[in-house]
Image 1 (cartoon, one colour):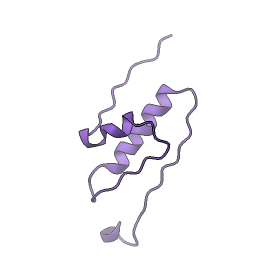
Image 2: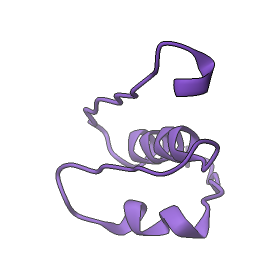
Image 3: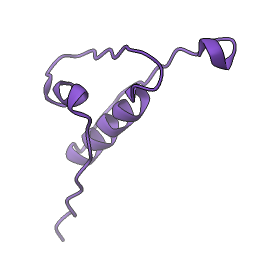
Image 4: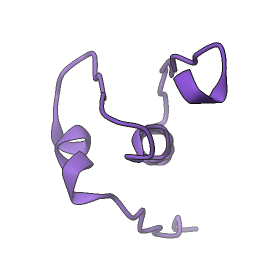
Amino acid sequence: MQAATIKIPVLKEYSPLFKAKTRYKVCYGSRGSGKSSQIARYFVSKCRSHSYFRGVLMREVGSDIRHS
């Protein structure tokens, strides 16, 4: 049985993230720039393409919504 191909939409600003061979990847920017969703898509693509994948996603949050 062949695995289904899934196309994962990626914002062009974050496409280098998917191609980089670095061990650590850090995304930063303003609120609403899509950082968390792009990292989640990156994790999904790695989990689907490798038989074994380990990763940690950390996100800084503020004390209230204004500082988060």
